[in-house]
Figure 1 (cartoon, rainbow, N blue to C red):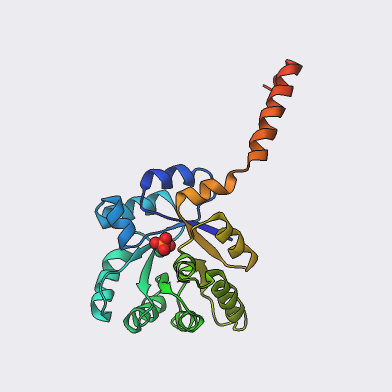
Figure 2 (cartoon, rainbow, N blue to C red):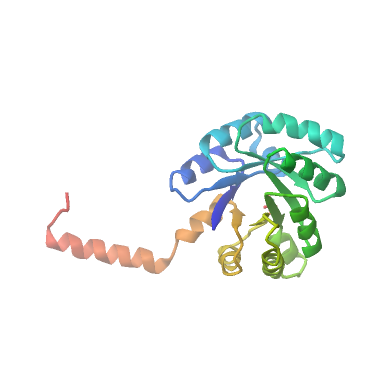
Length: 218
Ligand code: G3P
């Protein structure tokens, strides 16, 4: 299972990349806006920090302009994955880029039918947004279970299921339970994954008892 960071905050990416848990990064126009950075510079810096796929999203809505934007973005670094929306033009762009060997992440997926189209278009990743479905009172994780099951029926579907719009540790654990290939989460969720009060408590008591021995390993 791969962990991507869903952020444009370079300091968080640098810090968490050092833990060895970060396999890639995803961004979107909202994340770029929040970072306050120039898009191309930001993607270049992230690509130099994390060797895995770094998603950079096109902003055009039509095929010709999406392709032009993708040409700019994929030149930034070898590990750029072009993010396209799940629309007719987005999937047409996906098919072309994939056939040219460029990684594509198809975003804004909300149904199994859309996920089937993304796989047929040769996407490297499909991003179902679980949190936004939960917000509507629909079980986002059920969609993940369904897509993983459908993809398993076809050997020629190579698309990885990338769980996006992750809002909690429970989303991450459920994604693993259902066999999702990748989750992308905000830095805060990755930090929360480490935490348990009994780990803290146990560590404190071990430290206290160790001190009583007067020993030192080094
Ligand atoms: O990268 C897209 C996705 O993860 C957005 O999440 O929290 O804005 O629904 P959110």
